[in-house]
Length: 248
Length: 309
Image 1 (cartoon, each protein chain N blue to C red):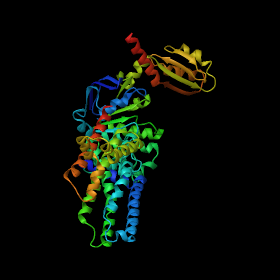
Image 2 (tube, rainbow over the protein chains, first blue to last red; image 1 turned 90 degrees about the horizontal axis):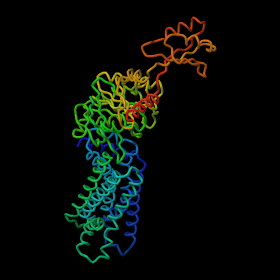
Image 3 (cartoon, rainbow over the protein chains, first blue to last red; image 1 turned 90 degrees about the vertical axis):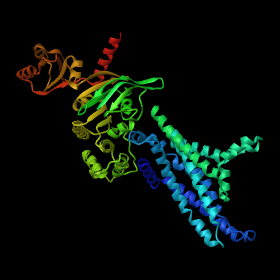
Image 4 (cartoon, each protein chain N blue to C red; image 1 turned 60 degrees about the vertical axis):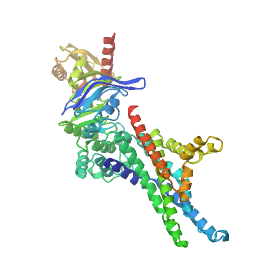
């Protein structure tokens, strides 16, 4: 636990010295900010929407798309860079377990993303002031839970990919590919295949569908369990990959 | 203390080390000598718990490297060949990170002590990316010494150091080696001679010789080589020296020096020196020539090849 925290602290601090992390943060906040301003402006000046206030999903929706790219950028060097620079040899010869190393790294990235997410809380607060009777708090909570779970999954997949490759860029594109599959591609076969049980499995695995339902304010137990299990699987695979490196 | 038995490591179909059995006691500095690719790094990586062996066992500081890997890693200080540093950290931050990973109770004191040992206390707040290669090497060594490990394993520690730093470094290692076990790899014979109590020569994954540096050299050399330089031409000196009892193979070298050999135990050097002065020559230089690692190597591998036949 203590070892894990030592790793986490280093990773978290490292992001604040890394231009890449600042670019990821800038990209996120800029996108959400522009979306926010444009939609507020449009809603205020369009008579069609005059009696419906914009929901909080105008902030959280774009976050998911941006994180699709930001998460691989933040995780790509986690383990791949350690391998490339030879510091993995150092870490693997200190008395810490492979699991502590991997989870510590993931947690560092996760806390950094949470920091960015925390900054976006400004928008709901502003939105709450602008609208009467204010925004639906329940939807906001469920939306933020969705974004946090999604972040955990994205980063765990990124950590796993970073442990498979020695090259951070290979890790970046591999992560992006896997995320695109889970985000966009996985439900596409359901439009063709007429087999219900097969489609149910794909729908279960589809992150996008779950995310959107949570964004709309409905949440089921599996909406929480599935991302957590996927995160655990990603971290487990990373730990295995580090272990395999030892045997090679 | 380090003890291995039948240590073997395969990388796919390639056998990196084969059946290594050796021991290093407390208070002993043991040198691993061999060319690149001989299996030195692989052996060290097994001993530090970085990778498990394919066959065989190894104990470091009394713990098994496979089943008690964490215990071994607590007690070993390791400096890998490519010094593992984080360039974006300061020297202090880096050592603090290592101290935290090793749960050192009074981390700051131990960091100061380690920096003092490698004479880097003035650069503690400098970024690692701004350090020279020699300084980075010293920071790496500070990292290995930080937790006062029972066993110190150094992989090619003097590469990239300038001569003055090498001398400092050797002094540090010798001090540390008095009470702890040090295993270091090198391909510089003089380094092994100056530092090590015992040398293991390793080639193609096997130990080909194991002895004290002195024994190893005399055992291999068979005869001692000496080079002599006088002021002016040495041509007329050659017949004088050839006549001295015990002098073998005296010949003039193209660079104007005179080289000869003698059997170990029958030191003819005083007689040669006297004869040179007596003949009216100004003696400028008089020194033994050791065998280079390459020569020792060639001898050992040839011996082995002959035995196999």
